[in-house]
Image 1 (cartoon, protein in one colour):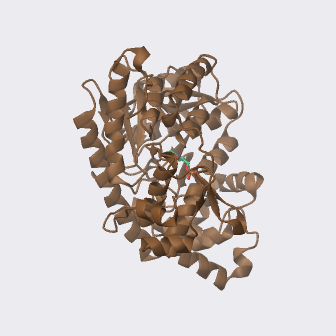
Image 2: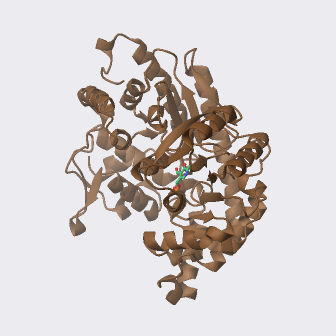
Length: 504
Ligand SMILES: Cc1ncc(COP(=O)(O)O)c(C=O)c1O
């Protein structure tokens, strides 16, 4: 293909809600995957392709950058940009998928802890519809406004932007967060009780390292967030599961496990729980707080992305029901509702434990980037953040409704579905007789990745459930993806010998 032919293959739809750079990226990827753009082929220079297709240079530059990140192309200095050898996508290599299925099964039997990471890696190939993505896509975020604040942060205080700061974080960001928490969540936090972290994961890490030692037991919801299970296990702490009901944890089970296992900590996600999307009722939140008081057990309340509520009334957080004497550690990753990827989050600790959290933060990484903190506090304080949040909510409300209606229309009888009121995750249970690892591989063959539920249980995994996350913002691809999942279930209903045949 020469430059004109490549440009001719890029049938761009300027009226589509899919950003042009994403269209260029995906159409080029299709040409590469279908081998019309062969390995070693030189791509037209950015400026030339932009002229030939009538788009902005930045559009082509961004598409090339993302293709390079996907491993499909690479720049070779002045010589230009070239198509790389194709990575083996399970979707394109039935034999590999069959082998993977066998080794995955063996790893399961051997309790290989890295199976999950391998499965995520297997999902991360060009052209895949990523129902693993549980954060808003950059195309839905007002990145230009944030970039403006970044530039201002550098111009106004270069000394500050590039220097070391206190581990607790910038006072201005701590104040801005306290204000946003009051406005968006009705939660009164003293800014001095807030410690800025590098994302919600670090917030969790700091509190866990402060409160737990090897051999301790932590009660978690069943299923729960993989990053928490992974962390607890790596600290030598035993996560023990409490079943989830439609209105939150089974309190009878929680109480009897407290009696029998003497846990040090309850790790809970009361709003739009990851992975189920379930929300714990106000009554249960009060009862859990009461239980923690009576038994002197600390709570980590992980409240990422509560702002992504599409319907129903907000429910007060456990932290907002607690007093400062209660050992409730409130942790938030700001990426789920605001800007993913800049790795900002915080811990709001009881006042008398704040200095301990600051110490843990200092031991962990001294402090989080002041440049991002400064730019983000300006962004949070601006109208852009709340306007963008409204846009993000309307986009994902629509996508949630689309996914639910497509699942209801296309999945076979016997499929279970938890419909959340917000967040970016849906929990789906397959009809009996279908195993979620088989399903994961059948879905990969159809270019769709999901998260196998079995990894998200501390013990006795449910083998039939999976998490479908809809952060990927392309509605048409989402519809295709859900239909492909339904087709994958049908694939599995066929005799084993005919599975993993060529994908059409
Ligand atoms: C429940 C929950 N807590 C914490 C995190 C980590 O958040 P961050 O990406 O801000 O580190 C995630 C990310 O997926 C999450 O889902």
